[in-house]
Image (tube, rainbow, N blue to C red):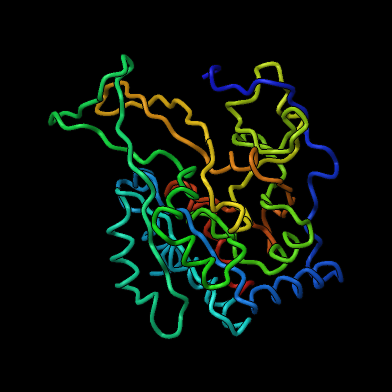
Length: 336
């Protein structure tokens, strides 16, 4: 709603806000890989995968456990990627998965079924995000057909809060962890790339967000400056009179984050979202992890969208997965 719009002066990012990831094979890329691998070998790097939500996009099946390549699931392919980097570094890379009340038990079961924590593979710690209750448009508790209240997962903005409450952030930091690479479980292009770890260290920000070139029909957050501060502004928060096409890139929801910087509470706003549940209007309030950029010194890195070096292959539903399958195969084989 327009009530969610930012207040203040909004401008496109300054040229220095967005850095282009050097091409593969260039001396610049090789130097970043070396820097990133050194950090991984030192035990400074971990992976965080967002696998919460309400398990509605794949017909009620938890997306993380949906087979993608043969019997390899989204989560298994994410784990294989982390394991590959860990083997190359000769050092374990911890992996954390944020679930929700709707996905937690199934993901835990899947980790056991697939033996994702055996055979020398990296450990996976699964921790749940928070739960809230839907409201009616009048502000009363929304009840479902059987008269019970209607819970929901209030957005991936729960990440830092849930990592702290579950003890996962303390576990990571106490083991010497310094940098977390966060990605969505359904974006198999967002692999753990030492070059991006190296670039995050080189840029010196607390948070580095990956962005890609916009294509027609793209919706989502984009890097901008609000009252001079570089940050991600969600598409629905831009003022109506701001030309979003003046920003040629948008946010992929893949971040590199300094662990010490998120070991505190943030005053992340909640946004009103209108839903239809059982054919009736329902209201829920959600927070977004990209809002961390308003609180932490942030930089943005433009990465390739598709191709062998592509890092943005979201598969939000079965139809999108089918369209992207060839590219997912190519990228998985190339990086393996």
